[in-house]
Amino acid sequence: MSVKEIIEEKLTQAFRPTALQVVDESHLHAGHSGWKESGETHFRVVITAPDFADMSRVARHRAINECLATELDGPVHALAIRAEAST
Image (tube, rainbow, N blue to C red; front, side, top):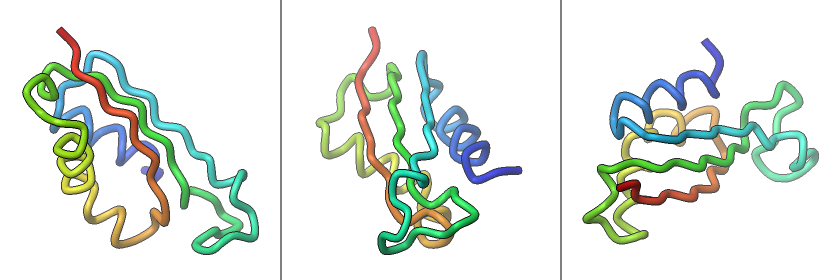
């Protein structure tokens, strides 16, 4: 299973999103710190979920970072997050 698929699966299980987009942006960071030629080091997550309704933006980001702690401690060097509440 790819890192992207793992991220998608974990976020889906944790937050039951109404919309989820996980984009591997590693190619945009070629030569930068943490970049690997094999990719899957830099990701952008756009997620909308009802679970975020009572959470601040910071709390949403913390929850996502906690959910993906293993990946952030391993292959993922950078994670850009846009998390919104759905109604």
